[in-house]
Length: 391
Ligand code: EPS
Image (cartoon, rainbow, N blue to C red):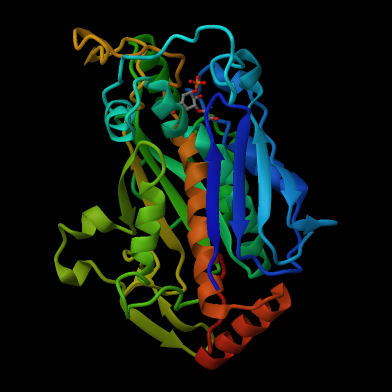
């Protein structure tokens, strides 16, 4: 049994759709929790005008009855409120009015290669689908994965550790679950109030200078059983699946699992997490450089995954480009944009990690009803003598 997630939709079209297939029956969903996730993705200092227009919510159109899954595919629909301003330009059907084409590709976006590859003349046919608006559909689907994980004792959180040149100091230990209690009230979703203040200031200064900013977010998952994923084939290694999922988020160019880049520069004796045992705790570690993964499998320690995001390529002072209809030098398309979306990307990262982890549980434990899944996990825990960790 595997979990599948597919999205459809354009940034300024009528709306987005997400279909999730492979969840067991009997899983209880919380409508408010889904709406909260949708709203959290819209937060963050540095967002542009579009977020004042949208008020995202995911409407369930199939697969759920009276708040519970039935085992079939679940379809979710997210409306684009902005479509009413784009009805002629983005109508699925021909319109009478002449709609001008976009011919100015933005460096760093899918624009130029997209028109080559798909044989298009209008950059809009590429940028609408490449837009990070699509992440609203992923977060809707991710909320279902998160509900499944909660039912098996797993919680997924995220925070921002860097925006532009402002970096939070490295911690010795992973944050605990309760450290995230107020994270969505922080303007940049950073756990350190002083660093957060500096990040906000940095965004303000750079925005005035017509700059966009990238950064780094971290996703943390608690309560995982050891042994999700596998060392036996490259496709089953969970590190690879997580890297794929995180790097598939628009503008993400790098992924780190645990202390990845730091560990590369350390001697072996300082890079690994030594193994201890006592009767009360069972097996345990005192460090987590590995980010909760060894040999492509979860160790049962908190999972730590980071995503590095490049600055958004739509700039209020555009870079040099070429008009693809005349091949004359020009400036890239200038559109309404965000200054930074790292805080939102963290929420998208949560959705992607939740999806990969829920899929890993489905692969390992199967089950047609959520009670079957729970029973299979309980049996496995008993076999390996696993005591769940305090988050
Ligand atoms: C985006 C450009 C902006 C963002 C958008 C992603 O949209 P617009 O062109 O309408 O101003 O706001 O993100 C969202 C709409 C969203 O919901 O996150 C882009 O080019 O990727």
